[in-house]
Image (cartoon, rainbow, N blue to C red; front, side, top):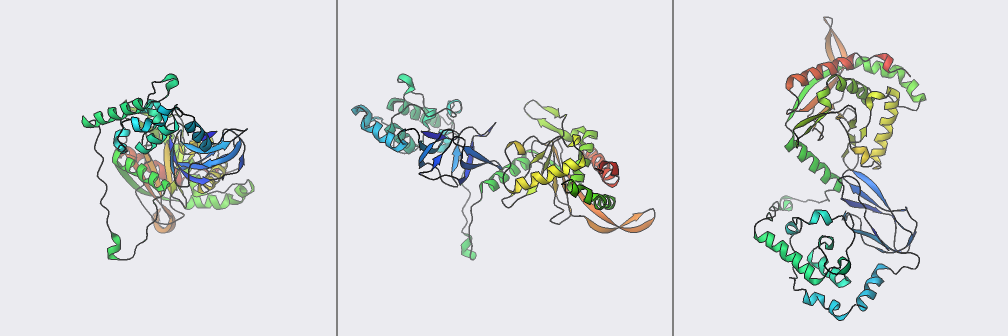
Length: 429
């Protein structure tokens, strides 16, 4: 019995193997985790859909997988292992089937990926199960780089013949000849950096590739503008110090980020345009009636942004608990794809690391993000006198297609006021 990769969720059809948790000879039970797969920035546990003994593992760590691809083969309840089944099927095939590779009349050279990816019929069939085809036909398709799920079989039961495969290949070639297949983008020039001195290389991880892709998408699709300001957080720190012990007794850790979540919930309600998304297809502004804030978390593998939902409905003590738990879950790479979706605004607090103002990139499809630097003691004029206060650097990046500079300035002015005048009644537990 073959276990294949199921659909991972809406819009998710591929991932990278980060852990293999079984080996050949292991007895596995239904729903036991076989592998861990990284998709986007989440790591998902892929369970067995049946029980049996592992006879073959078809993937290795670092492999990229797509929906329907083989993970493992099981020998369950006397079932014949996949490799033996292939041999037995080949041995009992009629003569014409054993000779079909020779008679297929298909070039031995694999087709370029660009041609294979543009066939119009591919998208509808790509998620289906393995089609009916002989082992030798499957081998031929693998050598040609063709996914048999995309080939329409004409024999009884949808079985694929050499003629079906040849027709599919000819159709792809005809499309390429007509110019409907775009030429592959030229590869970046490889530079030999070692000619100037010693170097080492390390793989660009799947997570870093995802981060890079998302950053490029955000930067190229959204016209960014950043509004800078500073807030006096002295009073906020006094509230924190006063209520730390009470929060610890409730199993919560009171942090600046928790305060900011509470502040942002009020500001997004007062400035609803900052809680929207632009639907570019319909040219409509989507005003959201919920307030889910993404929190940028620094992990060993890279930046991950899980989402805290319904921030406006939760007291500060509950936000503190959830924030701490979600950050730890993220650092352990246990967040799910659902944990990373649905944000309406993003908060990136670098204060624990250091630094001042910076220009955070908006996380599409949000229209704004708040970047927070490290608070520092500075001289401040209050009531005509110079005092030393703790000053917090703020940086609001916004989508200039949706938000005008004047609106961003008003948002930041109100944000500063809310931080400096945070009510103690919202802190008490």
